[in-house]
Image (cartoon, rainbow, N blue to C red):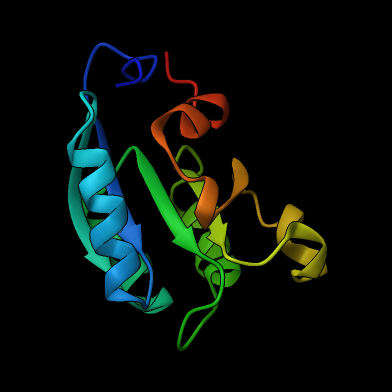
Length: 128
């Protein structure tokens, strides 16, 4: 097991992906680690915006391609209301194959879904 995130309290996490198998895999991975508590899951960008505003999670794992508004647009909307939110974008595609505005939506970073693990998250998420 990897070390817990840089924080004295567990990170609350919102998982956003339209594929239930990926959400289950991510939940299983994070549940096995100290330092992460999944507070909700969403399968659309609109749900992500609503849940992020209501629950105020420390970390949002956001798929880029979602039904309705994209993960990139959902990230913009979330950060407009809660600038301190940490959003990590996820995709199965390589960064070069993703929309050009990927790096301009305010997300803390991008991780390929195949590379998602707590160690990868720790490099992007630094909490006081």
